[in-house]
Image 1 (spheres, helix red, strand yellow):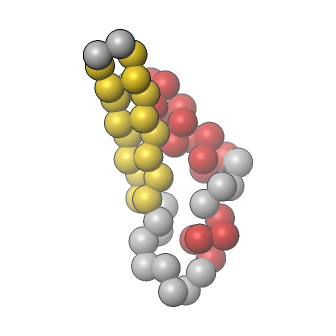
Image 2 (cartoon, rainbow, N blue to C red; image 1 turned 45 degrees about the vertical axis):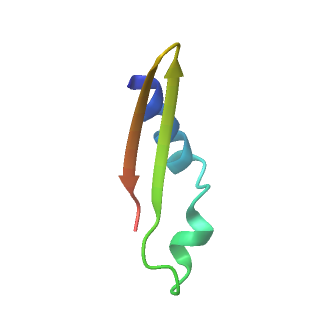
Length: 49
């Protein structure tokens, strides 16, 4: 789960979602961090707008 959280933090730090957050026609911006390890999966979601 820690790696999935790191992925979400990277999206925020590098401002990958910034162009979508600024747009008035987009009502919600969600980010997802997904981590796979063998047969397990962790997903972290954060709403930015």
